Length: 177
Image (cartoon, rainbow, N blue to C red; front, side, top):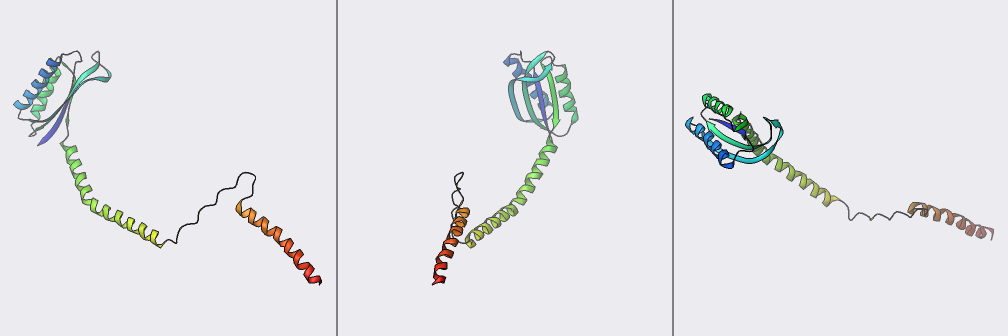
């Protein structure tokens, strides 16, 4: 079974009733050819990227349908769209290959998902173990000094250097006695 998507653009000045009649005529052609209509999307009037047959906008309609693979249906459908006065653009695209590729990718992803979940759980467990082994609370950071003031390390060094001469002076008189 082959799946196709037909997109066609109708003239923007076409009344809504005639647009629906065009859609129904396309559905009748598909039904007479043995195709089943899976989905119909009527987007309404939208601007075109460039001018087509003097129009800057159009009425967009998309139909997804399935058929047994008979290409004569697509040829007949395209012939009718080509000669229609209401249609300014159309395109038929076979999408079953894309759907198969998508299903295959989803199956691979589903098969791989338990492995990915197990790896994520193992990483989370390792992170918890690392947290448990870590020593107590980390020491808080000291605030940074204001501009022009010495930092904590510089202040401690300055205190030690001023304390050394005083200690030397204190020990010097004791040596004289």
